[in-house]
Length: 251
Ligand code: GDP
Ligand code: MN
Ligand code: MN
Image (cartoon, rainbow, N blue to C red; front, top):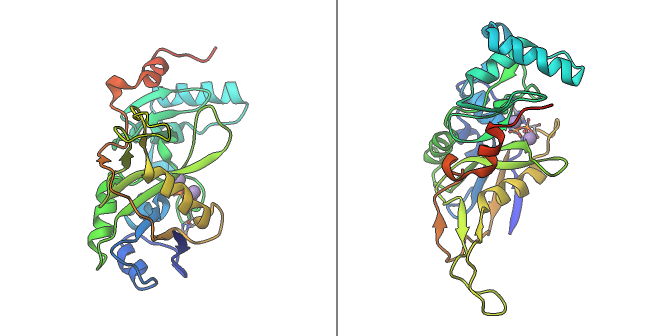
């Protein structure tokens, strides 16, 4: 398998046709996978915002006050307001905001970025990343699978990595259940989230700084003949970590 960046993409502006910009700079094939950083999907969808768009209500002011108190870093209440408005459920308020976004993705600050944004204070995540992925895919002649990625922190481990926040044209996971291990024992639990693994691999090529390579082509990767699983996000009812967080408070 090979991964290579789509070269020479410009600074993406609202209304830009990402599929067209990518297609004209690559030789995408139907059996490639295209991984696109959510940053440029958001820019093309005009998901830019200014702090002044979010006059802070009482809850945002309270959260910002607590975060500032706990971290010693001044938190803008308008930023907290933006996060609240982009969230369907807040799981942690302080010392940082962790919430679920309308698509089901759980992330710090609802995935709102303040880096690699020009001409605005904030860049919001695409509202429906899988619909964005489907739109990009529909604009590509070969209709390869498309993954929209975002760089995220994770619990238990240092550092950030890219994950898939939406996708089209492939199942997110490869289901190994029912296959045999090397001892002939049946696998009962392994559902491999290949979408996250491809997003992570592509992000090694995309970079995090001024690299300017938000679209990466994955070539000669084979999904294999194992069934896919349709789910990227846990159902809240079976998500015990989420349930534990609902009752948690920073002391
Ligand atoms: P995120 O992980 O989706 O939040 O995106 P990042 O901010 O980490 O950006 C991923 C990559 O895309 C980095 O290499 C950035 O330099 C690049 N990038 C971000 N915005 C643009 C853009 O408008 N045009 C181009 N060509 N590259 C961009
Ligand atoms: Mn991001
Ligand atoms: Mn990134």
